[in-house]
View 1: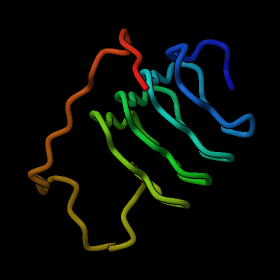
View 2: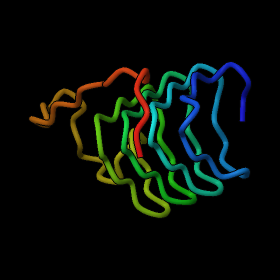
View 3: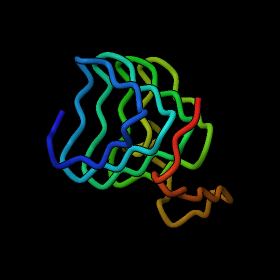
Length: 102
């Protein structure tokens, strides 16, 4: 784990998780082994990131999100016809990492 990542003290990170400098992880978050969290990513409280998942490209997850084993969030789509300009209709809100609860 990079020392410059902002990780709340009550977050549970697997020893083999790869957390980049500049990532922000709120309280009550679980990150599984070999998960990759890139710089600029913000993960809200109560999120569960399974092993081998990747959170890329400054993605912001709100509260209580679950990312399954091997998932890639923020990567290039497999559909080569996808237009990045197309609005998804999804809205994600970042929550402050100041409170911790279990």
